[in-house]
Amino acid sequence: MSRVLITGGAGPLGAAVARRLLADPAYDVRISDRRPAPLWMREGCEIRDGDLRAPAQALAATKGCALVVHLATYAPDDPRPGGTPFTLIEHESAIHASVVRAAVERGVERLVYISSADVFERAERLPTPEADLRECRVPRSARAFARLAGERYCTAAHEQHGLPYTICRPSAVYGAASPMGAGEPGVDPLIGELLDAAVRGERELDGATEHTRTPTHADDVADGIVLALGSQAALNDDFNLAGPRELSPGELARIVCEAAGVGASALASKAGADAAAEPERRWPSAQKAHELLDWRARIALEDGIAATVRALEASASAISSAASATG
Image (cartoon, rainbow, N blue to C red):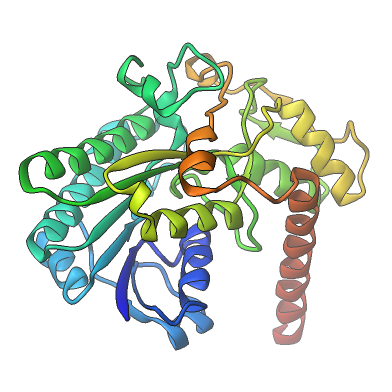
């Protein structure tokens, strides 16, 4: 049995990865996250809550682990895009430095780093294959730059110390009963905002843009991460994990509204102050993951959105019932 550490594992994407690993008797799972873990996770996994920016805490978290899935990021107190760029880069770099250094010192068999398709922020070719990252200009946004820096920590540790690694880049991740925050790797907050607005019956979004996304369900992304974790073909390589469809926010809003049973024109948007800084199109190619890992996004977008709406509605209903009972 191989022990797997999932850093940042208490979030929605980490939970999807943990469920898949727990279903396989070959794996024993440890979670390192400062957020509270759900009951099923506490019952099935070892839980640690240390601050991974501290090298001693990262070293303790990796003790006895053969494999590491590195999802941990820094979630700033200021949720505005670009609100605290220096702090974000400073703290996220500290997390990556500590976790990758610990993986080197522990001699782990594989570190799978979960980056983001946002590193292709300034790509010129669409769909964008992994090899184009070498030609892309440096990302403008702090979040994308921090993700790219995490990738470089991995490749540099491989070059200098022989660290076995795999990089996975999810794209516009959605699909959880709990909100997927912008701090989750690969998560674009727009889809979550659309879903939340439709479920709550709101009619307008602040800060939305007309720039495209390539939505990918969290369960599909988790499948790709677990495949990469155990695949020899994935060793010391990088993979985009993206759905097949590039959609505008208007197209996404129509799908969300239909799933929630509200008018297709119910969600209007207002462009945010940072709209001009975003890439107009986001469309990473997942062909390499299909060819080498036999991975593809299998959950149709309409089905995934509908299931997510139902889960969010059930969660909201449960919270309302609990509040009524205690009130």
